[in-house]
Amino acid sequence: MLEVKHIRAHQSDFIEALKKRNFEAEAVFESILKLDDKRKATQKQLDEILSESNTLSKEIGMLFKSGEKEKANELKAKTAGLKEDSKRLGEEMSQAAAELQALLYQVPNIPHASVPAGKTEEDNQEILREGEVPTLPKNALPHWELAKKYDLIDFELGNKITGAGFPVYKGKGAKLQRALISYFLDKNTQAGYQEVQVPLLVNEASGYGTGQLPDKEGQMYHVGNDDLYLIPTAEVPITNIYRDDLLTEKDLPIQLTGYTPCFRREAGSYGAHVRGLNRLHQFDKVELVNIVKPEDSYQVLDQMVKHVQGLLQELELPYRILRLCGGDLGFTSALTYDFELFSTAQDRWLEISSVSNFETFQANRLKIRYKDAQKKKALVHTLNGSSLALPRVLAGLLENYQTENGILIPKVLQPYTGFDLIA
Image 1 (spheres, helix red, strand yellow):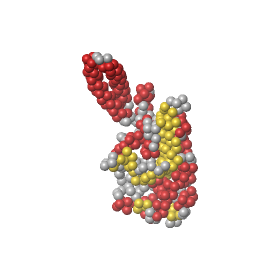
Image 2 (tube, rainbow, N blue to C red):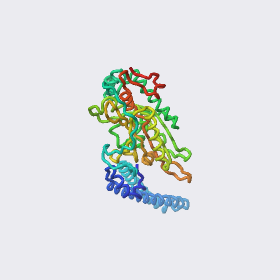
Image 3 (cartoon, rainbow, N blue to C red):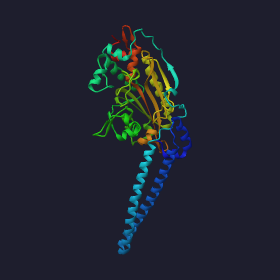
C-alpha cells in the first residue's frame, strides 16, 4: 500500500508511472488527498475539543474544592456538550480513515523505472535464455502421458477424491516430488536462508497484509465458518511472521525459506496449455522471503535471481528470464522477474518462478518497521520468490529427460531419489 505522504509529494510522477500498469490514478489520488485532508482537519478539531475538555475538568475540580458548585455545574454542562462533539468527530474521523484505507487498497504498487511498458505477457522483456533444448525421441510424450505410462501421477484418482486440479502422486512420482522439495530446501538453507514451517491457513489480516486481499479474493479458498483462507503461497504466512513488528537494524536482513502446499481457485479452462501439471488447484512450492533495508533490496533481488538460476543450471533445464511489463506485473510488485523452462514435448515455455521486489508496499500494510542507525523508524523492503514451484518443474523434468529406455533423473537429484532412471 502506498503511503499518503508519498502520494502527496510525488503525485504527478506516480500518476505517470502507473500508466505503465494501465491504471488511471489521477481521480483516485484526488479522492485520497481530500479524505486525508478531511481526516487531518477532523483530528485537529477533536484534539482541540479534548484539550478544552481536559482544561475544564481541572477547573471543575478546583471549583468544587472551593465550594463554587453553581459555576462547577455550569462547566459540567459545557463538558457534556464537548463530549457529544468529540464523539461525533471521532465517528467522522473513523469513517474518513476507513474510506481512505479502502481507496488506498485499490492502488497498485508504483512500477520500478526498469519495468517496460505493455499490456499483456506478450510485452514482457526477455533478458536471458540459457540451457540446451534436448533432442527427444520420435515417440516423445507430454508429461501427462508419461505420468500414466510409468504410473507416476494419477489425475483421474485425484478427480475422484476431490476434483480436477488435485493430482495423486504415486511410487517414483511421489519420491521425485519429495526429492525436489528436499533439494530446493537444502540449496536455500546452504545459501543462508532459515527454514520455517508455517500454517496453511491464514486470517484476513494476513491476506490484506501481503496484498492477496482484496485483490485476489476470488482466487483463494475461504473456510467460511472460521473466516480463514487456505494459502495461495507460503509468502503470505512467512511474511506475516513480522506483521506489526519494530525491528532493529541488526535484525536485518531476514532470509526465510519454507515448503508448503499451495491452493488456488483459478478459473478452469480447457486445452493442452492447462492439462496435467500445467495448472493445478493444489500444488507444492518452496518459497524464499527476504526482509531488508531499503537501500539493499535491489542487490538482494539480483542475488535471488542468481540463486534460482543456479537451481535450474544444476537441474540442467533450458530456461529463460523475463522482466514483466507493467500490464503483467503483480498488484503488489515494483519489479518482477519470471523464470520459464522450455518443455520440449509441449513445445512451449512454462512459468516456474516469479522473483519480486515489493519495496515498502507490503511493509506499509503489514506495519513492519525498523530503527535505523539514527534511531529513526522506517519501513523495510520485502521480497519473495519461488524456489521453486514444483508442478511445472516436474513436468519439465519428465518431458526433457525422457529417452527410449525411460526417464533419466538429473545427477543432483539422484542422492535424494535413490534411483537414476524411471522405467
